[in-house]
Amino acid sequence: MVDIEFTERTESGVLRHPVFRGQREDKTAREITMTNRPRASEPSSRIDKPDNQPLVADVPITHPERLLYPDQGITKADVAQFYEDIGQWILPHLNDRPLSLLRCPDGLAGECFFQKHPDKNFAKDVPRVAIPEKSGGYSDYVYLNSVTELVWLVQFGVLEFHPWGCRIDDLERPDTLIFDLDPDPDLPWKVIADTATGLRERLTTLGLTSFLQATGGKGLHLIVPITPKLDWDKVKAFAQAVSQAHAGDSPKTLTTNMSKSKRKGKVFIDYLRNGRGSTSIARYSTRANAHATVATPLRWDELSRGASSNRYTVTNLRRRLSALKADPWESYEEARAPITRTTLKRVNLE
Image (cartoon, rainbow, N blue to C red; front, side, top):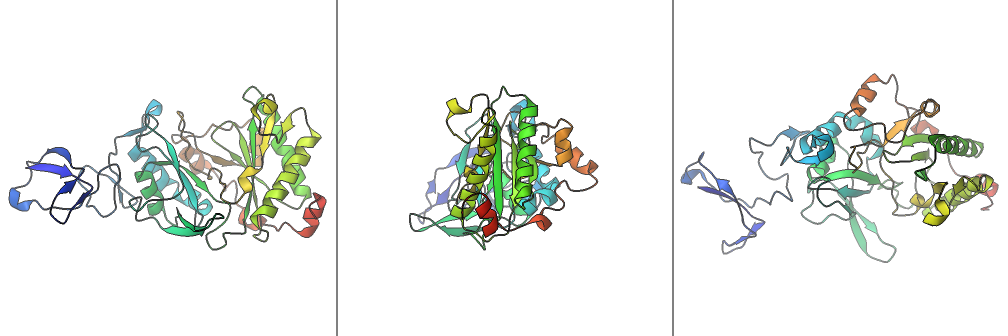
């Protein structure tokens, strides 16, 4: 007997896109049944778990040995287990938010691509929300509420999670501000650390509390929880005004100009992640780079002790979390504050 995998079977019994998987000597002909099992590149929760597929958070992981991070020897099963282990840390920052996803189904050795809209075969056990587009019509996005749903997305090759700055029950009023500090690679770390500290102080004078995140790349994010009162355009305009004012105070080292030539030798303060449909890397998300880094929340006092933006990885983050005496962002929800008319006036928007 042989094992054949296929995408579907027609009414006349013809197999579409059949693939020979190997001979089967463990069953007799009478024990074999025909199922519409999807091909391994698009797995489904509807299939039974073969003996060689580990269960992680009740999700059968196909090709668990596949190297997603070849340079680090980190497999698909390793990444799935990582997310199950840190579920309590990442879920509060992902729950009920539309997601854009960076997928690397074959690991970093293969193709990686962003996916905003799921097709009908993608991660059927993960919920979707239909969001109106400015151009008209609706588009589906995935969101999640559980570790199982999180691991299902890993099963489909997701390595990076990029949430919207709003929740699905209040799509037109963001509850998060993002200031992305993107430094020229040749700048010393002290410059970006000083930029983050100075921007934090400016936001504090505006009545807003910012939280620090190492991006897992070369920069830092300042994340500001806000009360969802204003629409996207006003929130983006506010972020732009704050960023431009801050850059204007130190024009030799800071800029809000996207041009690569204008950013040389400077820290680029990117406020564009605050527009409708824009996203930023999730707290505790893995990054699709050779070192398997993780976007990691930090305490502000860690910045002064010489933190880096790419210190934490799939390999060492769990050790950090187990050693913490408190969540670095433990007061995050309590810190939410509105951007008031008075606040807008202070940045010349009212």
